[in-house]
Length: 94
Image 1: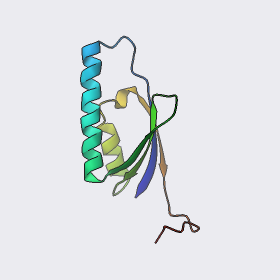
Image 2: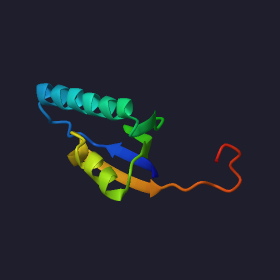
Image 3: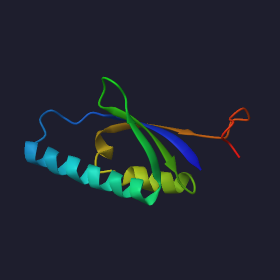
Image 4: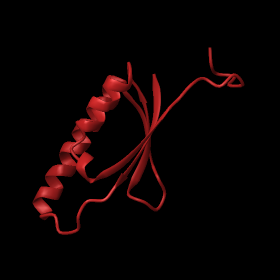
């Protein structure tokens, strides 16, 4: 199943710099692992914001939930999930 997921990040400004650096490094490693596995298909920044719009290809709601809750930054995110379906006018859809 395909999902569009928007992640808006708000890391507290008073977070200890070394903790922030560690958190961001773990987030990058986790997201890149998911990208290599084919679960996290695309990630685009939202211009002018500390946000991204991503496309996930996972088995079901439960798998996406598990992935999102595994994000090291999840406690600092507002996440919006939109399930996707094939559009009947899409020339690329099988």
